[in-house]
Image 1 (cartoon, helix red, strand yellow):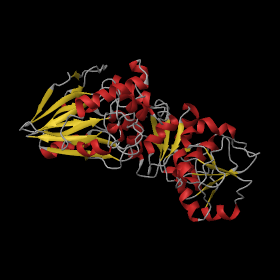
Image 2: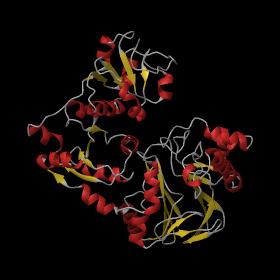
Image 3: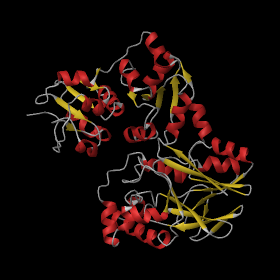
Image 4: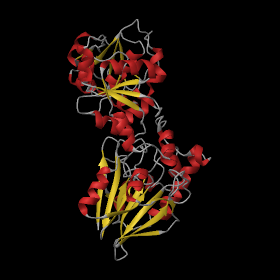
Length: 471
């Protein structure tokens, strides 16, 4: 028996590859399935099952393509309803994989169909729990995402989750290894550990959700502090339930090289969003006017989902040369399948053709420290509120990036302002969005708050301002 966690950091997502005696199972596969097929061929095993712990909201699973290419059935837990052929297992049902067994543990609460899969060895000993979004390391799945589909409140779902954990998971032995579907950085929980594998015994000791004195306390604890889910979550759930276009088709369509003339024509006739995935430092020097920068060398796909939201939005790509396939692939992981093509030769071709370009006024933290007047200048900190509360520039305004659609209209573009995040990645996203909407009178700070703090312009101050113009 062999268990391999295939962890994708930009999604904070864990897929699992399990083999025993010539047979393999994949749990919660990524959208692009060729790596699983290649691995199975290399190992000389047959993929027998594709297990899905639930209908994922934060990414599009590869279950359909993997099943179509291998003939392996897609297996969900009880109550799941799909618009494609799938095996809906019973609670407690067992599936043989070589010399081992995978048992279905229905654990509703995060969603109604949420299911954990318990792996037992040839001697009947429980070895590993693939816990999906039911149990994370340090946390449990948020109970607010399935309210509408379940016709239940988040408190009622949290109560179901409490029952699931205490009847199905807590009785298992302490030495069972927990393999969750997500780790720190995922929006599917709020308090996840950076580690991606742990023993159940350790989780029983240190996981706050497993240490509540009663159901009422559990419900209060897991529903406290939940932030609104990203806008694309519901669309990803629908794709996972209803089906989607093959990844091969999506990739072929997206990898269409467009000349400058073709790219410009497509932008003008299709209402496509021009998405520039180059590094912030390169984008600042020059970009196609009204394009949005979300750098591929960061939490690319989650930020695309959080800010663009509509997975059907047509997209035209500007990438570093050689990064085109990676960009299309990572977009498809969160359901953005409508990529019309990419600018051949990247931004340099656009620039060399004499087309109009725009720039971001990016300054260093040292320049900022030398010119800012804390008492009169407007400084916008677009980090999360928790980051801001820990430490920030004195009298800065906290306006998180994921809420930019709500606050950008408050800005008076006649008055100059500064914008920053933690390191420069998010602030360049914000800068590009502001400029695309006609807001230009600002300076973005290179290196973000880390550089600002090193320059001596920071103060712990728990006042959170509500408006962008000082009186």
